[in-house]
Length: 274
Image (tube, rainbow, N blue to C red; front, side):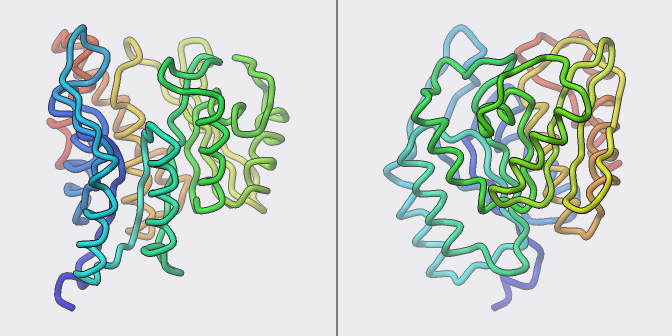
């Protein structure tokens, strides 16, 4: 059918009206990389939860009907990207989505958003984290931060893990399904490391200088570039370097503009470079 001729990526995440994160970060990034972005919202926020106040609507009950309409259209996707999932029911819905839409040539990138700095996010339970591991076998590329990689593998969290420890974690994650893993945003003094593991290859560290404070939406920008590059046939190491350099440049501009921490990163000025 005509609407299946253009490359498309389904993005399963929350919609956040202000704050540059989740779907509102993925949509312009993926579109700038010449791929149609098809959002499937898990919830709707006026602005993200880092603000003192926000409006929120859960979209779980509507997700199956939303997906049914895509089935009626006989849509097919070159890529699928998942982000924050807020309940066990949503995880089950996403598993069903994979079974319906993940074909042999569909690249699936799973960002298992669960926690940071060695702890689960306040809204996440241990049971929900355990259920998240059931999505890992569907991933072609998995993009956890160090905390999430430790949670998924039952590894004790340490901030300063060495290469050997990271390889062990990645091998354990790979046994769960994915052949390509990126442990993102590992702090190395004034730098940030993205540790790239591809089964059967020597792991590679991609390092960029840390610019300013950590901001919401950075991970969404990162995973969006990774999935779009994968669909466009870019190799993983090149893609991670691409994403890391783009984020570093956007963070530098964000600092120059003195934007509040809650406002995410100023990536709009560089979209044409993607």
